[in-house]
Length: 232
Image (cartoon, rainbow, N blue to C red; front, side, top):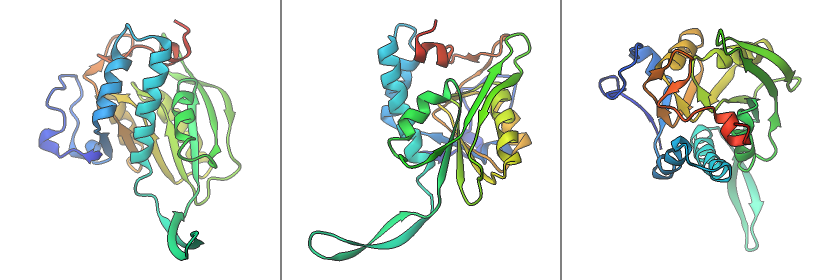
């Protein structure tokens, strides 16, 4: 269940350098679910195999998918059951999924199970290990975002650099309703994104303590892409 944390309880265990105020946390939805907690433990564990990592990444991503789409608008339709006609509902707006390559592909595969007809935009953003700045190396997006809900898939919201670069590109293409789906985040990344883009909602399963000197999340779960694709 997604929960918008009230200010007094927002991050009691976080001791990092960034204090998150109401303006930041008002747009952060902490996804709480027993199965997500269980799978997140396996994602954090350095002993988890590639097979196990992919399995648990899929579970967490699908839980996030259920939460991030829970309030999408619906339209009424009439369908014929084997017995009679009845009123039912279908999604009233298209959803465009935009994974940040390559780690975002892990969330894409899981979310397409829920939204199989969705358009997909691809953004290849690579972080410079020396500066932690994201550089684009590939981009292929739908021709229009008009009337669509855009969901940016980025499992680790660390410095926020990749998310910021992606959001600029999406908005330049006309995206007006954007949500970010991630698995683990930290105060620095949340602050960076919400400060620059206060209209964007962020869904995350965990808000970790802080970044280290190399801009990796602590305690984190290591390099998500390397562990998912087995390229350690």
